[in-house]
Length: 170
Image 1 (cartoon, rainbow, N blue to C red):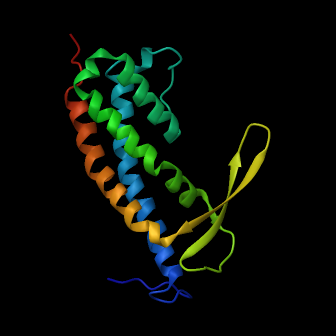
Image 2: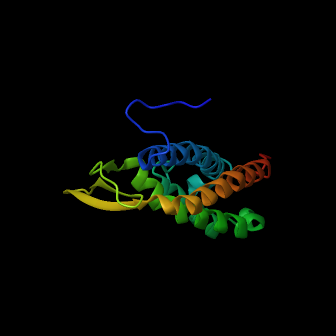
């Protein structure tokens, strides 16, 4: 079923942008669910909560990725998964900034030039909010789509295998 959006011309660059952002939102949610399972498993089942400074489970996605890296480096029972988990964190990092920009940015201008849209996003810092302007070129979507589809296929498998192999209580 095709859903038409009032005021958006079918086949337009704007429709393509909306479809792109929608895909990123849905696919990222799928990927991050697996990252959540992995972080939860590492924190509760592999002793990640005993690592220095790790009293609480990480919340922001960048902290989750850093936590997975820290666990891989310091928890010997993850040795069998080391290469896969390191590759997985690299895959997350490869799409993280584009995902963050698209999900938290807002169109700065409704005009588009050759499929390139201009966005702004507020970056919150402890003492100030900074305005960041960025451009998104629809021609970049096929590579982003492929990366997110691969990540969406890979992340759940790895997270479930790490969960299945978790240390059993004595």
